[in-house]
Every structure is written in C-alpha cells, then in structure tokens.
Amino acid sequence: MSTSPEVLLFIATGCQHCPAVLQSLSELIKAGSISELQVVNIQQRPEQAAELNIRSVPWVKIGPFELTGLRTKSELTSWVQKVNDPAAMGEYFGELMTSGELDKVQQMVEQHPEWFKVLIQLMANTETTLSVRLGVSAIIEDLAGQDILKNNIDALGEHTHHNEARIRNDACYFLGLSHSRDAETYIRPLLEDKDAEVRETAIEALEELA
Image 1 (cartoon, rainbow, N blue to C red):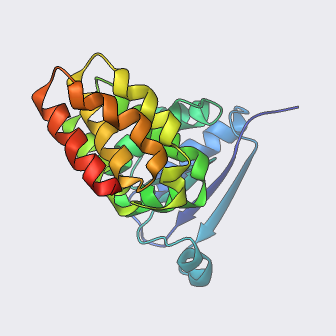
Image 2: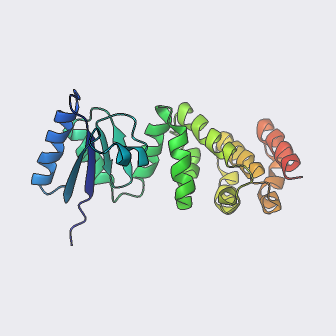
C-alpha cells in the first residue's frame, strides 16, 4: 500500500508563481512521489479557501504541512518526504514561528494536543534559534492553566534535570504556567539549582502555583 501523500493546491488566475508550483507538483505526481493532486482556483471556490483560511496563493497542503508562496520542486519534494517523519513537525513549527505565524502553530497544537510535545522538543533542543524559542514561549504563555499544559507536566519535568541552565529555566517557567500543584514536584528541587536565574524562576513558578 502506497504511503505517498495527497496534495491540495490553491492557485489564482494571473498568479505569477502558481504555474511554477503546479508544474513541480505535476512532475511529482508523474513520478509517483504523491498519490493525488487536487488543484483549486481560489476565484472559483472562495468559500473553500475561506474555510481553510487561505490568504495568499500559491497555497499547498502536503499531509499536515501548509505551505504558501513560491516553492521550488526541491522544497516541495523535501516536504513530501517529511510527511511520514515525526521529527519534521518541529522543523515545520520552526519555519512558521520564524515567519511570524504563531497563531497558526497555536491553532494546530490546540487542534492536535499530541503536538504540544513538539513545542517541548523545540524548547529542549540546544540548537533552537532565539526567534523560535521566543515563539514557543509566547504560545505556551497563551496556554497557561489549560489542560493541554497540565497534561504535559511530566514531559516538561524531565527537562528540569537538563545540563543546560537555559533549558532547566524554561521548563521550570512553563511548569509554573500549568497552574497545577502536580508541577511542584519538579519545581521545588530547582530552588537549590546551581544557577541563580533558575533558582529565581523556581521561586516565581511556585508563587504562580499558589
């Protein structure tokens, strides 16, 4: 049974970049890299575009990945190959955050709570860029006190033992935002952390729980 993904493409009459994306995707379907290609003219199906919150074209959906603007065949091929790669969601979230699409990431996480762990992975990755780290923080702050955060206390708690103080600090801060007493088990030992900033964050996190 084929694991090649289905692809949805929205284009518009007169769009400068749409023909190039359509051509690339047509070549991919001929090669068997994708199983189906559905092409929609946004001017003919505005209601469908509105449902998907499409604001510009070309717009491509490959598995869970929604891509906008001109994309080379190489880029499209790369995302097609990543559909079955669990680690690729972190790269996708990172790209969205870098381009300022935090609301989209938050919406995806709220719709698929299991993807919250992708935010934790980005937090704990020592190579995560500053812009992505700030994006992760902003999203989790908006989820403060919600079940999606409370249900990931143990996953966050694992990183309170990380070698890097920054990651311990972030994990501690997010645990405080859970507003759950269950997080105290992980936060309280950080009151004795060797890093002063982590100790201060632990104090504030416990106050947040109180």
